[in-house]
Image (cartoon, helix red, strand yellow):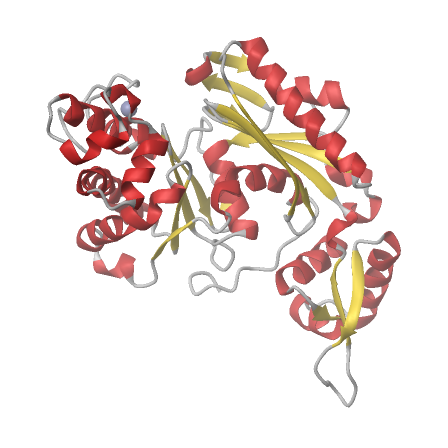
Length: 411
Ligand SMILES: [Zn+2]
């Protein structure tokens, strides 16, 4: 399948300089023509010409006047955020979610449906339902959608838009992007969900100011997306970042991958719930009983979350044990990649306050000093929308050419 670029639809964006100017405006929020010229090194007259074209196309708007400069106040420019809309969808093992996002990655529509049935047709019906609903919502608001970004769990061939392997729903070599593209006649981009999350965070979330970012998605599985030198690093077989299968407990529980003691077997939400149910079964978690009345199997993420908010000591201990293993796996990865930021998101997001202190403590012990000098370990900035915004970013990134990140690590 040939991946159609959103730039094909907007002729002015085929040139590099207008995209670079848009990138500077997006990162600055609002900026004068003179500052764009200064920062890009492009001639003032070139900037004037490009900005006029962007104003005429409606991508940029003039907003008031900035601080005094050379005796007069410059007119400031900002993105006309609702001049462009794209769809971002996340196909997870238990739900499909999607957003309509504008040029600033602000959400204008949002839909989520649970996946009750993991058969191929049921998954596709839900995917189409989510896209149809988002397109309808966009239409009602007068937005036209330029393209669809898809964040898919499992291994994704992002160049060809193929779901190579999605074990949770037993997909192999599914030409997902081609199917969506032919149904909606819109450009479609596809990426693994943790990679999409990393990309969204790097463009619009907590990873913006640095060029080396590790974004870890923790839920019923654990994966990560790696941004190195301002580029997503896919690996030779689109499989980089499989942090969930680092061995953190030699001889530990059997993992779906066949090995023993992978991070996923001790720190995923499924693993932590399983451990909680075991403690309930053995009568070793009396305080947790009220959150799973009568039946240990009733302990689910929601009830464990309630127990956590109530500071139930067993619930807190369960998260802390998982956090120690997560910290260990992160330490191995940090020692190799030397990222400036490690961002954690996924289903675990609501309980991160209870997890991060232990993760930071473990990383603090395990990672060597030089790698800690500039390291920040934080929650994702886009919260529970980080994957859908990341999917939308697959399209939005074609519109902008970003200025070099001005972080400490690669100036
Ligand atoms: Zn494994």
